[in-house]
Amino acid sequence: MHSLLSFFTDASEKVRLSAIGGIYNLLNKFSENGKEFFLLTFERVSVLIADDSGQIRQAATFLNQALKTMVNDAVFDQNKFNLRQFVEKLA
Image 1: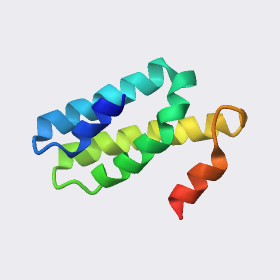
Image 2: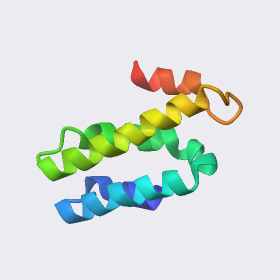
Image 3: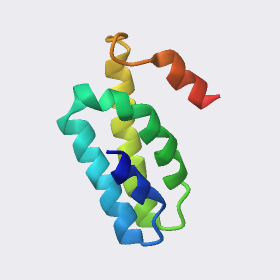
Image 4: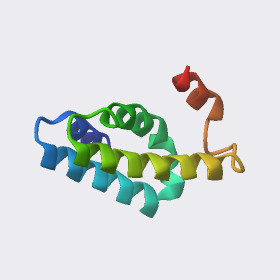
């Protein structure tokens, strides 16, 4: 997952778009294990939402919605998600 996140900063729009799709699929498929990578993904996706490419912004916004759903689900499961650490990232 970490290597996939590194492609978020690639110069190629196609590579960045593929990385967004890959992360989205991983987080959905492995939602329980995905929580540990959530904070890192959140940090990187926030940069992509301001990308020059409209297609990248749209895909990043879609991934952002999936991350919001994960946060909502995590509120009920405090043992698997560090909400305090997430809020610190927002500040």
